[in-house]
Length: 214
Image (cartoon, rainbow, N blue to C red; front, side, top):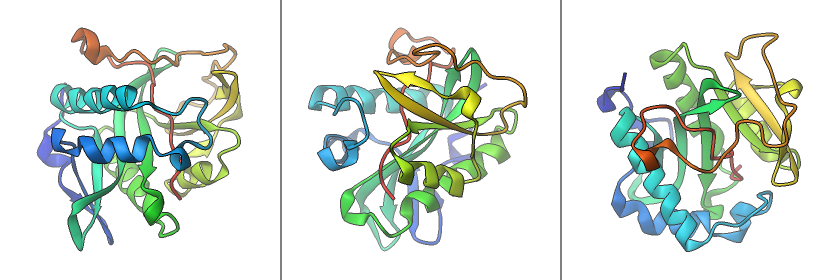
């Protein structure tokens, strides 16, 4: 069952405005997602084409599910998008989860915004969809991203870790059942094709790692 978008957007924290993504966010999404500095730990830097497809997948999730990743602005500058964060439905090892995502403009790194936004995303997910575990995945070398997930209450579960695109990935979770894990496969349930492309209401395999942006 889809969510009521009014329960998810807009949201505010001490410093941030978190709102529903719009098609007018394309330029900001392209600028932030293709910046080499936000992809230091990613196996592949997105192209303009792949970033545009990613934004469309995010928009489709909002239309289908009634919630999704937020566009982020500072409260005192609401017209300037500085990043993207939030939760989307996804599948990991055939288990439905909420994928925690964060990616910010390097110009605002060091202000604690990624942790602030992630905490609000996790808080809202546990309140509105408490039956679904929250999961963040990132490359093993991306220590700052792991710290952001931990600051939001997630814990590393080594038994879930796996390799993706030839790189070791770390999985951090909140609400994942104890003793339930299957991280032995090279790619596991990780895939790039979102269910939105086929119009399916089934959650897609997790397709967006937690991203750099301390």
